[in-house]
Length: 110
Image 1 (cartoon, rainbow, N blue to C red):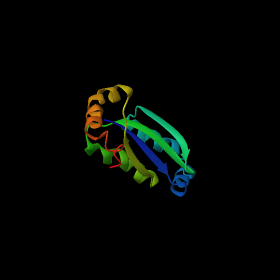
Image 2: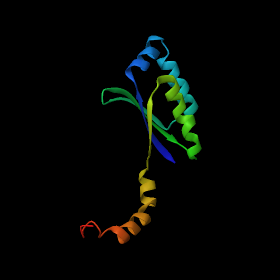
Image 3: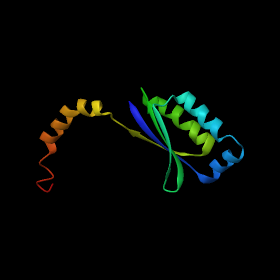
């Protein structure tokens, strides 16, 4: 399953890593282990943030993905399942079923 990770890097602990000259090597080491599909570094809500797209086969992989960021940066990590356009198209029948079963409820004020 494709998952989008939002990794928020706290200012103080990340500054310590930067001052130690280890930001690049630490990030590269984590990413080499995780082999993400894509990685973007942005600012979100005033915090250094990495957006990382990984493909996981099983929920048991979550600790292996999150722990390096927790340990190296005291980061906040959140996981968000993500779909490609092909995934969304494949989901079409289940969306249709939900519409048939629940689609009129909002219109009825329920």
